Amino acid sequence: MRRILVAIKRVIDFNVRVRVRPDGAGVVTDGVKMSINPFDEIALEEAIRIRERGLADEVVAASLGPDEIQAQLRSALAMGADRAILVRSELALEPPAVARALLALVSRESPFLVILGKQAIDDDCNQTGQMLAALWERPQATFASKLELSDGAARVTREVDAGLETIEVELPAVVTTDLRLNEPRFLKLPDIMKAKKKPLDVIELKALDVDATPMLKVLRYEPPAQRQKGVMVRDAAELVVALRQKGLV
Amino acid sequence: MNRILVVAEHAGGKLNASTAKCVSCAAAIPNAEITVVVLAAEGAEVAAAAAVLAGVAKVLLVKNPANEPVLAAVLAPQLARVATGCSHVLGPSTTFGKDLMPRVAALLDAPQISDVMAVESATRFRRPVYAGNAIATVEAPAGRTLVATVRTASFQAAGKGGPAPVEQAAVDATLPRHTRFVSVSAAASDRPDLQTAARVVSGGRALGSKENFALIERLAQRLGAAVGASRAAVDAGYAPNELQVGQTGKIIAPELYLAIGISGAIQHLTGIKDARTIVAINKDAEAPIFEVADFGLVGDLFAIIPELEKQL
Image 1 (cartoon, rainbow over the protein chains, first blue to last red):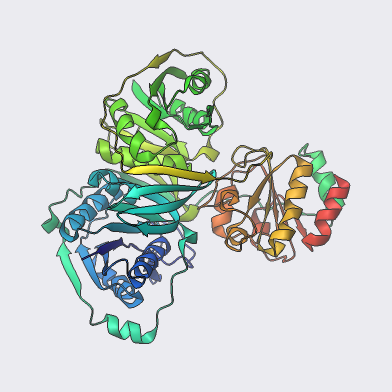
Image 2: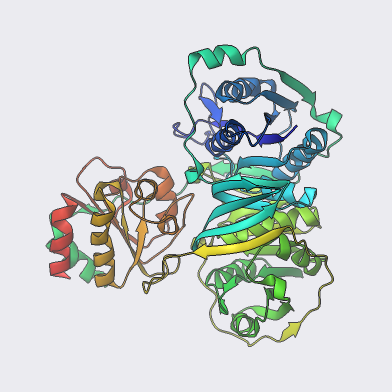
């Protein structure tokens, strides 16, 4: 069975304007829409397309956290994942713990490819994929904007500061997605209905025998410092005068 | 004493400007003893450039032909060796550091704090989360190695000092062969580098086409500025990905930033909030970019850009 494992995270929907709680203990989550991390949605889309091209047999979506994540896993199944795994935990998990748990899933599922977002839009860590690759002792191809599979290898174009870099990695490997890899499909109602019948397994994190003890502690959250709104100028001439006065041009 | 290892970023025999920013971050940690490690095929020039950064006590040069072109999977095991016994291992929040540092952290069984924007103590740091909509103060455990990436726009480059001694180090680590560099395609440019330029002119979706985006390039040329782009402009194919400014692109802190035809999505604003002076030109007076701009000009960019060129 040629299998792709896709790791997804449940995050505050990217359209929500995130606000820090007055007590500084976190951000406002009450009544806030939750979604699949957009980068993970791209990962899932890529995996489904690979299967649709006949280069994989099965796409497994996995996530870690509380039971509520089942909603996002059902969305993943509606998008086209064949089955889903929830690794249940009430702990707030840090990237090293997530990477260890994913490694445990990797040893159960033996995927030839693990695809996940380059970062989650909540903690913005950008760590999990690289950590999993290190623990697995396998290649990593981060920030992918193009993924081509050939016999036993993947050729990945990466968005790097210098431009576009292409590397070749032997499989199995970990790929993390950037925004321009693909545009995820929209969910269709019949697929949402069908997804209810697809398998969704629940495993307790404890059963994976993974050390998930947090190492870091967030002491407080604060809103960012705001820039002062400046002045409006009438035309280009006035703008140039203003910039000259400040010695900027 | 905090033994801090800073990972040098370099290409083509030149030290990347991000390294001097990381050294400044390291120097902000109390009782810092800073070593810069250069992993290179040759690296003598890079090591010499790192040795004259103020605050650096020592440069370690680890030579191996496998070290260039850079592959995180090849560098990580060597770095993990060198980092043994260090209190902190710092790398830049560039795509180089973002790719490499978590792999090192996992090998060291260490926690990582990403995008450090301020140092409060040897174990306490501030970093942006939720695309910069919140700032988290994070406490790391004392007495174990901490890996961190440094948000370079938050730190001034370290000045000239030293020179510190350069030592060659032999590292005994098994290097994987499962990853191969194929190519890198970057548009050759005589423009200033986007991440270090004092002036940046960025264009957005309102430019409307790749051809029109040349207006931004011409204005940048006139100002001796680097060219940037919003995510929308890159997605639309008006500009290449390496010009993207914002949360998922480059985070920059120029003296002067001109945002032209950019509405100012939060992802974009996160990338420019440390700019000294922001100028916004947009036809929509309600665009969020005006909330953060020092100078705002409402109008048609196709009329304003030629006018600006005439005035400058």
